[in-house]
Image (cartoon, rainbow, N blue to C red; front, top):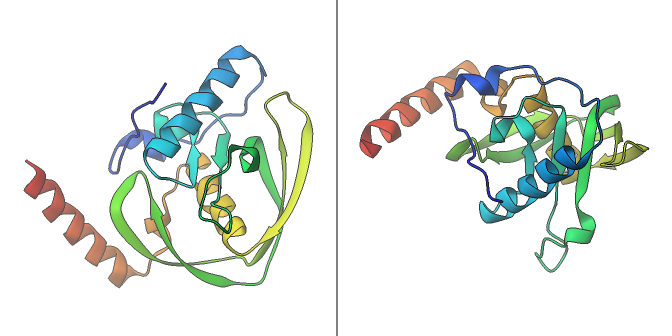
Length: 171
């Protein structure tokens, strides 16, 4: 089922998500719904808080070399923790909760993440490049932050101005 993606400045996006304690059918339904929602919005990642569920759950599904998002490549991460970060890279990021806006963000180049899969089995993933960016972006959601908070004061002001105008034009 496709769920509604909440957008900035919705206050729920500021909530710190809580750890999942039960790996049950309710969690599996959430994960399946998140996948359908993300694909319907042409996203490559989604955190549960973006569908108004404050749980430490995120999914990532990067397109392959043929630009196809293969469900076999789907990462479902529950209670993820980044245990290592190094290097830096700059990537132009967008967000389903901040539609129509993208900007360059500096992140770690290389990370190691520990998380559980949908069945509660421990996983470890080492990654770099775009996948590392996606992980860091989605994990920020879990702590109640958005990528726009990483922008310089100047870019942040520009964003706020453009966003207010966009919201006014919508009305």
